Structures are given as structure tokens and as C-alpha cells.
Image (tube, rainbow over all chains, first blue to last red; front, side):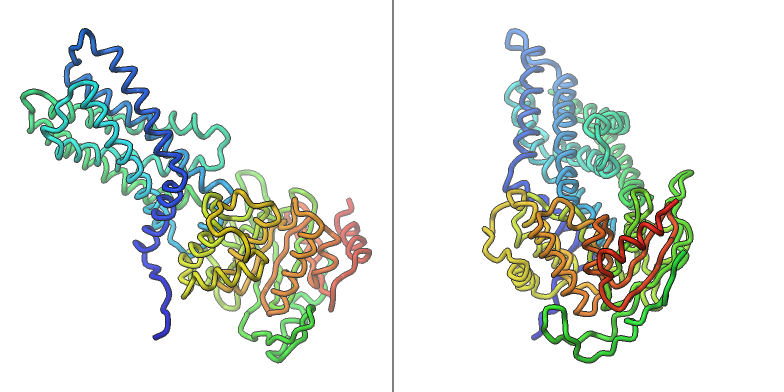
Length: 235
Length: 266
């Protein structure tokens, strides 16, 4: 039977692009190592500042630390994922291929989410250890909040990273542009996580923040998919 | 503006055996249509980069786009490649308008001064990836045969291509552009930073692709290279065509330099 060639549907191409990013990361471990190192430093610094006399800070503070660590390490990972497109002008070859721009966006998004979730797992363990946090009590719900926060962060971050691909001071600009936009997600994630880390968890409040994050993610996804093509094309 | 035979005589190349510059007989396919640039303009803010550019680039012919810095050469190539949309006019390949969304853009292959590769992947992995993105059947075998063709068959398979020399990267960049057998090949200053041996090799490859009957477009500052390779010369100045001329064979350095200086004078 004749070889009909690889599948070239939307998701096949998106997974191919995400797979390429993950293979590169698997070989270099550059993003995971850098992001995880930054996250560890942040958690360590906060633990020295807030754990006084062996007494852990309240859940609101621990939740804030968790999300700040994720935010800081996430920006580093995001920037590097897109740097790989810029090196050797690979992005031009990718844009010239018949792959739809939205599939390129979906691929970059998927890879960023997977890499960020890897770092977040490590951060969650660190926070549990250093702050004696009750992450394990509601691990599923906290994981949902982290996933939603990551999706929203990566959705907007991928668009900005693509827009800043050829900018000189893109690392500074990425943080400057991205942080204000993801603030609603950060607040919702921190509040929802605090509700779940409490000795008497407030599941209703956590559910409210989860729904809020779903809504924000949907808006970000629609706007991101719509904006990616003109931004990456320079139109 | 100087024009001569704007559609060119090579557009009537028969689909019969033709002798290539390398001496081998190949069939020139009759189904590769010429590329028409129809009244293309491009405006960036208040700056008009291109104005009313029209020309025809035939299959089986090398078109050299020349001009001083800022003339609009790379902008024109970016529009032809569909990476940028024209502010006015259109690019037509045969009867089809080439646009970003049109499936016919798969007929384009592009080689720039950067190789267009993932620097942390190996040579075979890069070519296999692009073969898959273009839906090339048996992409791994195609990638391997292209590596042999560009002289990189012996390259370490797992070594990231960032460890390659500039010449090796440019060879691999050409292989990447050829992986889906494009009908139209676009080269934007491909010999920049190549050593003399690399420039010679690249010239031979351009002729080889021309002899296969492809549309080959070369943007360059190197008048000697253009004189040795191109039959069709398009000279741009301040975004406008000042010369669009064909000759039956390569121009020769003296002829092209005289034509260039005459066109860009003033």
C-alpha cells in the first residue's frame, strides 16, 4: 500500500510542534532547570522571611508564595521557548510551511503548559515541605487551579512572546506587558488556593475562583487565537 | 525603466529533454507555471517600500533581484513568499493568487541568510520535522537522501545543528527548503557569510534547480554571482522597477555591472 504521508490536520500539526519543543527541552533541560532553580530560590527566600520560630505563615501567604514562584519561573520558561524559534530564524521556515498559524499557536501553547506544569509540581512539593502546607488534602482541586492559571498564563504569554520575538529587550518587555494582564488570574489562583489550604477549607469560595479562572481562560484563549496570526505575521 | 521581452522566451521551454549546466539530461516539467508579480505595492506607515512592481518570473530561469540597500528587494521577496501581504497588487502563480491562506503556497521554498532550522535539533530531525509539517510521505527517507545530496550524509545524526559551520548550516537550509519538492525557490542573500567554496557550491545548486525547471528567484547584492547565474534581471530602486530584462544566457559581469550602474544612476 502506498505511503499516504503523515497526518496534516490541525491537531496533528499542533502536537507535532509541541512535540518538537518538548524533544528539544528533553535534550537540553534548559527551561526546566532554569525555571525550577528560580522557583526554588523564591520559595527559599520566602521561607526564611515568613517561617519564624518554626511557625508557618497563614494559608493566604503560602498561596501567594506558590503563585508568585510560578509567575516568576513561568516568564523565564516562556521567553526561552520562543527564543528557540528566533535562533536560526526557524520561525520564518515554520510560518512558510502550510501549517495554520492557529495550529502553531496551539502547539506552542501545549508545550508551554506541559513545561510549566512540570515546574509547578516541583514548586508545590517545595511549598508543602517548607511551609507545612496542606496541599495533599485537596490536591485535585489545587491542581485544577494551577492548571487553569497555567493555561491562562501560557495563552497570553505565547501571544506576547510571539509579538516580541524580534524585539531587543524582549525579556524585560515580556514581564512588563504580561504581569498586569495576568493579575486577575494570579489573584484568583492565590485566593482559591488559600481557601483550599485552610484547616477548614472553603470549597464554595474555591469553586467561585475556579469558575472565575475558567471564564478568564476562555476569554484569553479566544483573544489569543484571534490575535496570534496578525501578530506573528507582522500585519 | 528598461524592459525587454517582459514575459520572457523561456516560458515556452518545451517539456522535452534538456541538457543541464551539469551536463545531465533532465526533463523540464511543463506544468510549472510562471510567477507573476502584478502591480505590487507595499506601504509601512508613511514609508512606501514598493510601488507598482510588476514582472514575470519563468520556470527554468533564474531571476536575480538587484538594487541598492532600501530598494525593496527583500520586501518584494517577503511578499512573493506570502510572509507579508502586499498593500496593493497581487502575486499570481499561473491562474492562482498566492496568499497566506492559499494551499498553493506549499509550492514555495525559501532560503535566507539564516538557515531556518531548530538549532538544538540534529540535521535529520530538522529535515524530518519539516517533511512532516509539509505532509511529505516517507519523510525520514526523503530527509536522509537530501542530507546525502547536500553533502551532509556523514554529519553526526544526534549533534545539534548549532555545532555546524556556517557553510554546513546553509547546505542544511537548502535541504530544508527542498524537502517538499517546491516548484518555486526563493533565495534571499543566501551566500552572505559563505566562503568562496560555499558560494561556488550554492551557485551550482541554483543552476541545478533552474535546470529542473523550477522558478528560481535570487535576491542578492553580489553582482558577479547574479551575472554568472541569472538570465532574468530585475533591478529595483526606491521601491520601483528600473530595469526588467532577459538575456538568453547568463549576463556576464561587465554587462550586468554596466546595466546596474546605468539603472541606479541619479
